[in-house]
Length: 142
Image (cartoon, rainbow, N blue to C red):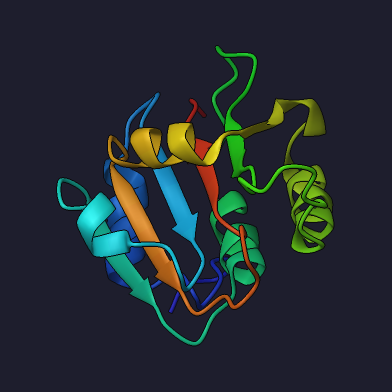
């Protein structure tokens, strides 16, 4: 155990976060996201029993967002025409706002999100039940 490090961040999870370099991306995926197939070229970390917001808070407590790009946090837009914003996104804004500038957050299409997730260094599989609750973060420098 370490002081000040969320217990959710296991030794193997911390190792992956430390291995990531500037510009690498991590996806924190909801329970419906195809982590293994989209992440076949990535490291997939299981966080069963935890929701995306809880994982997001733990990750952002140790993980800087990339300050060299305009947007460094990405949400998956629901593909249905005129779909309402997923309610869980408000939780994400509060969590991100504890650590980073909210202007760094943007929404991208489901197609683009899946394509970019396929290039991610790591995909975290959660037990999140909310729909379109996926978020991708781009690592910055300390």
